[in-house]
Length: 181
Image (cartoon, rainbow, N blue to C red):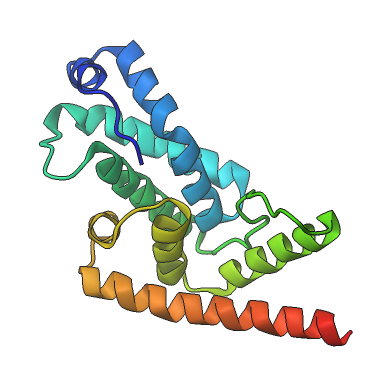
């Protein structure tokens, strides 16, 4: 994850709204992907991110740089998603998987794989899903993922191990059924 340039960050920390807008544009795609996959609904994602950006704007002058700006923003967005889940008391179904190229295959097979992966991700606990999305989909290292999630690095590793095993089993079962069907 590429960090925002220090000049823009400095201007945003001092209340420059255009610089803050540049900050949001820089991190928004990754934050949207995380929020959507945690919440499973675009409207809820928008609500959570609106709250996250307001909180980030208010808190940015106090950002001490103990972690990267990206890690700090992902933590705020993750907390906003948790708050959204608490407000609605439901974990939404995951509607779609990350749009990644799936080369060399029939487009219908690729679509089927994305749907299967989306279903498998939705079946994971919120905690396991968040670890997978941060590390595997967004490229965070264990240390930064641990900071975002507010847990030790070892817990990130155990959640990833459990989640990857569950995803692997679901995908293997699906493809075994396709091969036999």
